[in-house]
Amino acid sequence: RRRQGRVRGPERRRRERRRGERGGGACESRGGLQAVRLLRSDDRSLWRSTHAVREASLRTADACIADAQQGEAGRGEAEAGGAEEGPQWRWLRNRRFNAATNAFIQVAGHSNLFERLCESVIIKQSSTPERAAYEGISATPLGPFVPRCLCACQRGEVQLLYIEDLTARYRRPCVMDVKVGTRTFLEADAASTRRRVDLALKMLAVDPAALSEEEAAAGVTKMEYMRWREVTSSSATLGWRIEGIRRARGGAAASHYPAPKLLREPEQLEQAVGWFCEGRPAVRRAFAARLAELRAALEASRWFATHELVSSSLLLLYDGDPHGAAPPGLWMIDFAKAAPLDGALVLTHRAPWQPGNCEDGYLTGVDS
Image 1 (cartoon, one colour):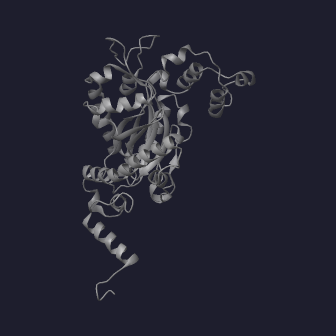
Image 2 (tube, rainbow, N blue to C red):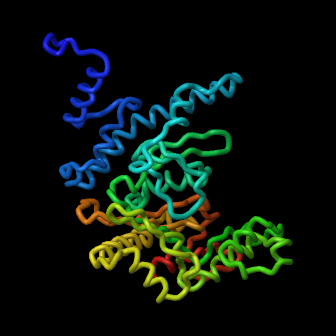
Image 3 (cartoon, rainbow, N blue to C red):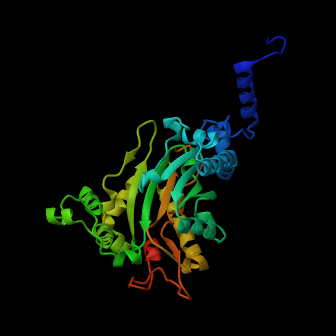
């Protein structure tokens, strides 16, 4: 058959895949994420241009997003007719990735809100305010400082955001999540008097001596919990705190910095940042330069001046592989509690918070 040119079955499919890989062209959404997989291969030529890697990864993800959108449509039709969900959505839901190369990397936040679509796109269950924030920021000079929201769809009251996976460009991603702002609670939370035992349990999980037995049994209000989080960390004094740190090196398992949320003193934070950067001055200089660019863009942004950003984060990333070509990066993430201001109110993002002034201390954190 080989001599006569009649190649069938598995061998023909293997040849087609090899031809696609050599050409580096687009792949079909279901049959081959080989173009994306090549981004994680040892082919150094793919890493010569960080911008090219990012664009190629996102172009390949378009096919996966198209499949997901078809699946959402099939799911909606099935739910409306009382039938079983469509095969496209079932294929997306049942997709499994190789744990070694496609594991979702997260150092803080609610893990049950995320699903991986492909190696360069994650799906986040979110809300209308976060979707509006991504749409608003992308049209401003702050666009380069946020991950791309490639598309969004609504399922009931939940918004599904298809967001660029910022770690996909790095061979061995090292990640630090920094919560920014002196206020990390909504003003509506300050008026709530409902006591919640689940928040008391969260406090005890971090600090077993935080509450007495009677206080733990009665629960705490959301305001008490959030203020405790701010006072026991560096949020109240510096306007930022470390939510989580993950460092990857060589073939060893990734390591995490212990109890970063309880760091308060500048010396403790300096030690944690030094541990994260592994004593690499070039990485620290890159983060400092990126942070200066972000502050200049924030101070000049009309969108930023007319929105409060509560419980938002900065994501710091660099490659633990010294041969990786992707430079260190810093991005704004988590806009679930972003809200436009009423009337002609404009924020400084540095003034102390008082009930009704909506100040969040975001720039106070960036400054420090």
